[in-house]
Image (cartoon, rainbow, N blue to C red; front, side):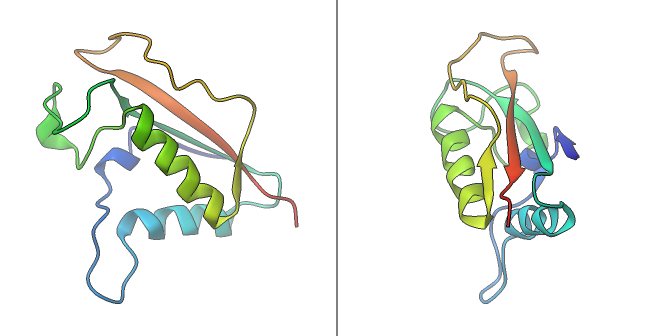
Length: 112
């Protein structure tokens, strides 16, 4: 199992030409490290707004996830070889920290 708590929102998702983004590199590395059936838990800052990140501590993050971008991250992880573990709840549960909450995406590495 690999846990990543409040990390992925700080990893840049832009790259130099011909190179993977640091976020792609991170997700690929997690996939390589896990055995089939292993779990990857991604917990990130999360809110229900669309547009520029103006939530508390916005200057510390590269991005904040919302229901749509978390779903896009899940699709990206599927292309690498992860599948969701259990159900997915993308509803907004209200502020729990400052003016944003936390969300987790739990994935398992596909069996060979």
